[in-house]
Length: 305
Image 1 (cartoon, rainbow, N blue to C red):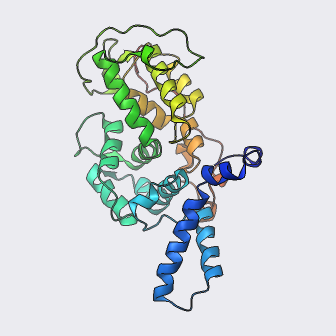
Image 2 (cartoon, helix red, strand yellow; image 1 turned 90 degrees about the vertical axis):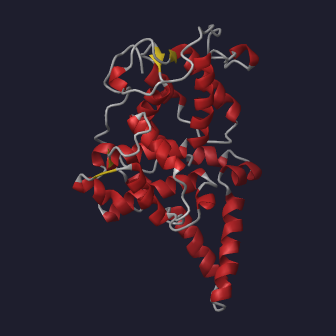
Image 3 (cartoon, rainbow, N blue to C red; image 1 turned 60 degrees about the vertical axis):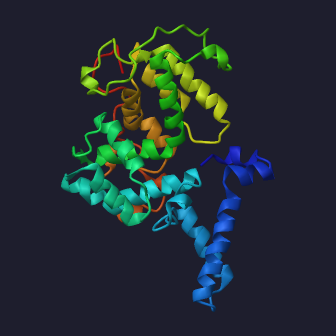
């Protein structure tokens, strides 16, 4: 979540808010009262100890409702990790599944998990509404991590991207991030983004990268920590070698970038996804540091992402 120095620099109120302590206290008490009705002899201190131990270990989201999983970034990251631990054998076997099949697996861990996040994950990989197409487990897992953990950021970015495409985005109406140069004017683009394979992206597709980066930094600047955002250095690295960028091309880059995986800090590096043993799964800090996949944009033209 954060390093030691940052944690001890916070006030009590900031600490409670940053780590969602009250959220977990309220849920722990609610769970205790519910459990006590079924088992009057339950020992509250032991129950609460087990509850918070489960939160620290990241096992607390298993079979919980979707609204609880979405309450904190730690819950989301923990659920992603549990999904990997439960179904990584699919990757070992090399099985390819559709979006609906992956959704069925997710629902085994969270029965009321909606289909939409899984559908959006498939669009990152396929860049189209081909929900019957098959995806490998590693591809789905890292795209799912990106979509689910950064969901609010991606929603805002999608709206901004559509405004850039239509020519209705006006940088002058919002506070400009100080690190950026003056905003550039955009020519009206195509009325809607046509999803296509990353290898077929042409310079005419997408939007100008400077405007896109400016919009992203503005979203992060105005978020005030209310939702999770990808690291700025990762975003700048992804966009540093391109002239134009598409929405889904950018998301593919995020999903494949090791810096995003390190920021969420819940999955191993992609090269080691099948190598860890059950004893190594107790803490994200034990995941191997070597064997990182190459970062950057998909292996396509350097003029458009």
